[in-house]
Length: 333
Image 1 (tube, helix red, strand yellow):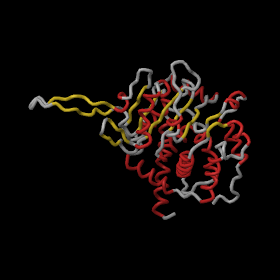
Image 2 (image 1 turned 90 degrees about the vertical axis):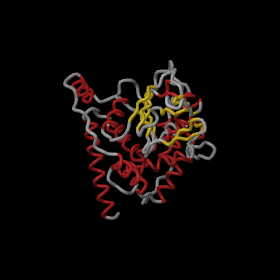
Image 3 (image 1 turned 120 degrees about the horizontal axis):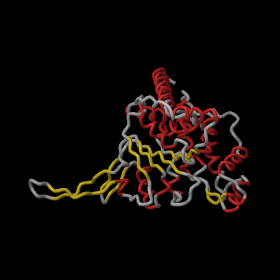
């Protein structure tokens, strides 16, 4: 690692540490979730936060947006939300001087660097699919015209996993566009006491913007430069391929999995691992990076069969089986 790159990584580390401190002014605990959001930012992907109401999912995203010098829009998904409410629509405008009428594209809230898709599973599939092109291609096509989205572009979505009334499951094609699915758990007893103290007392300090657009873009460029050994690339490939029942040698997969993860899962795993390495001040991915991110990357890309559901087996337990069954490299570097 050259001296110049080393200095850049050190400066980035300080900026990310300051970013975490700013988020800590508002968000109590949830260190793993905050780290996942920062990894998503560095990897330039999208993240789905899943948890019951009241766990500060929306607050975390809004706080992250406040600490970044990026454009931010929140979209509240509801059953009557239309695709045009997300991507925009054409309106007829008249030039009062000439009387000429023209259609002008009025951009929707998806045209922002950071988009919060709040309660994304409350809208029907047609509306959810309005984000598909934006998430994958970073552009929106309306009619015959394609409009580029600002760079960087991140979708951070939230959903409630327990309430079924008035919700629509996300299609597998859209789930696959999320770099990670992060489960947000309950706070500890000490954290809950601190939450009560902060939210029932004086207002919190305002969040300061600590990273500008150019710094974020450069951080994403550095993430792509993080080294991954051929041994770890092979291990990541074997883990992903082991989720496919037709070719897997893992008994639990052959028995319980209906559809395994596709190649995009491997891409997501490597990119997320690179982001985690850089977040911890390293320019090389380690075995621990891959293992730490395997569940968030795979859990929404594995379709379990009826037998697994009947036995109460979930995708996280299956990932644990994969880690036990697929031999890790003895010398990953």
